[in-house]
Length: 178
Image (tube, rainbow, N blue to C red; front, side):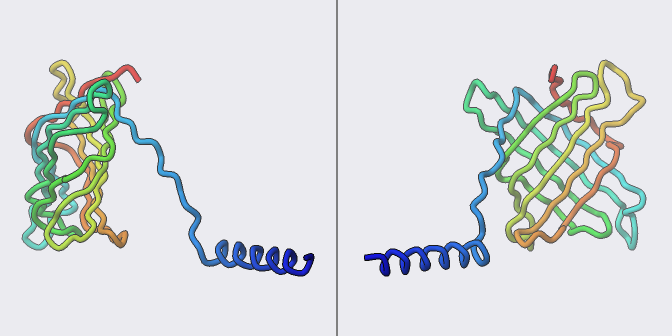
């Protein structure tokens, strides 16, 4: 009876060693819970260093998002990063299709962080990350709103990116106490 038990133990140890060497450990994703927030507006961002070879160094943003944790608990709305005309990026439009997280923080210069999935011509497995800082509170027009984004394909290759000031338009981010 001891021989089969020893053989079984050897097989189990060998299998677990093989799995640890060749297998991937399962990972539990981070909890992505949005806070009560709203983001809305549109505008144009210009990044002078990205204006090259007939490209004007701009992109447009149009956003209408909200999250109500007491409601469905899921973010809803729409986001378009459009008319991308910057060097070192794909050109054209990127449309968000799914929002995995929207989180806002700050009261005097509320900043929104969001990510999800997207669609763009010739980008398979499109994913995006974005930050929006609403710097124009209570009539203060001295500091522009800031928008930054990154778009990757399913293989992890950067397809588009940019961070700069809104030179036209306005984006409002609901302030929070956290």
